[in-house]
Amino acid sequence: MNTYDLHSDKELFSQIAEGDESAFATVFHKYNIQLFPGVLKVLKSQAEAEEIVQNTFLKLWLNRLQLPEIENPGAWLFRIASNLALNALRDKATYRHYTAAAGNSSPEGEPDALNEISTKELKSIIAEAVELMPTARQEVFRLSRYEGLSRQEIAQKLGIAESTVKNQLTSSLKFIQEFIGKKYGIHLPVIIFLLFK
Image (cartoon, rainbow, N blue to C red; front, top):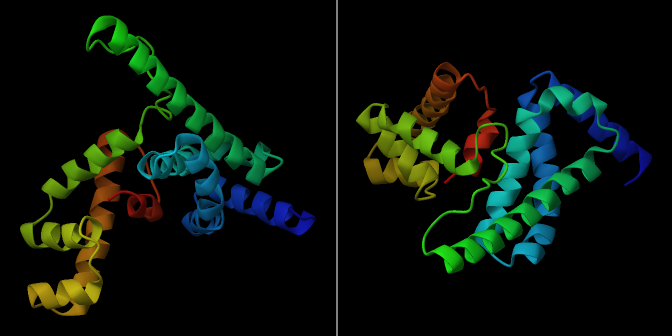
């Protein structure tokens, strides 16, 4: 990494520390594709690798107040992803050991909960919020996030204007953000929700 990149990343980390979601999006888009291959090599599972990369960026956001102190942001992200991948491997090995030794009992130690919230918990919280939305908005959100349809495809499927689909999706993300903020005291940028399908 050249000096310009390092300086640029440190500046982005400082902006994220101040709650700048566009800076978070920039870092996400820059490092998402860089982190994934290494994690995949360790875990040998695409689904598990995707989850670890999601957790890396979730950890980045949840620890954003500490980001200005980080000297090499890229190296820090790779270290977080590596540690999470190794923890996942260790947890799987521990789980296999315990289940082999004691039937279906769980291992005593729980993996790092990413500052009280894990990917699994966040998916559950998002699902809880979606259930509280009006039926039409739920349908648009599910078609977009869970079935991967484009706005145009959703509009055609439901017989509504594409602008209505866009408005429903915007309202959905805002509602989910507010729900998580009020119920759990956590503010997450919109891009975090785009990770979870």
